[in-house]
Length: 317
Image (spheres, one colour):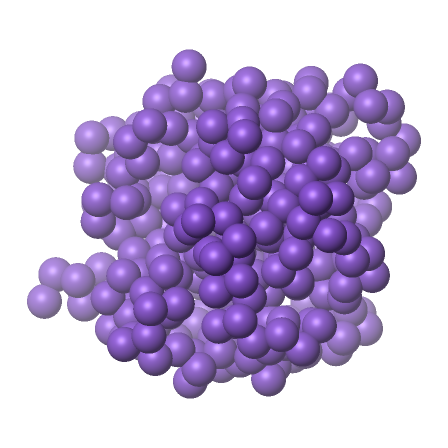
């Protein structure tokens, strides 16, 4: 049984961190080959599972150091039907792969959770197509049908909620939200944006969030933005606007480069961890509903610790 599915602690306040970019860590720091940037490939053997578990555990220990909560994301961003097929898995593998990934997080929680640092288990899912480009555009009904397989699988695990990361158009988000509602799973929608603050298809964040809320009767429990540096969107967020108040968290990139530039980069751009922490502090001070901060591509424990240093001190003052 999921521990927090019916009463998610992050909805009651408090400060929560999310880990840095797992995939970039495995590729650039551990030298692993991840086809299609799929972290599930690391789970094929015990050593890969240990890499993931050790990496995520460092963020749990960091959360305990600063007395905050932590949301652990399962490495299942590429564990939906089309991606599994590309990776050589069968349809029958979908449930076992998603369950294995969540069970790995359950092991971490059972070992490390404390009263002051609750550990929330988040089933991570991703877009059907490329995260940076709308290469596959579905209707809401098509998206609901497609994503239902993975969402239903995660609903049978101990995942407390599901977050759809790096979405780049609203129709897919609508279908995901409807699929999650049908499976009685709390769902978070996380959009990505280009350096101009718009989704890759040219849609504004305001339009995307309002479309999803209107089409789903506000099914997402909150929204996030991920896989973009805060400089791409911070100036667009007016705390007085209702759609902005639906945003509760950010997983920013370390780099200020565009998605195209990051795709073409041979080396990892890990930015400036101290500046990263200050950028997150600016968001926290500006947006009173925000209480979830972490990192995406190029970030690691340094970036999230600098975020803790800056933001925890601010929350205490």
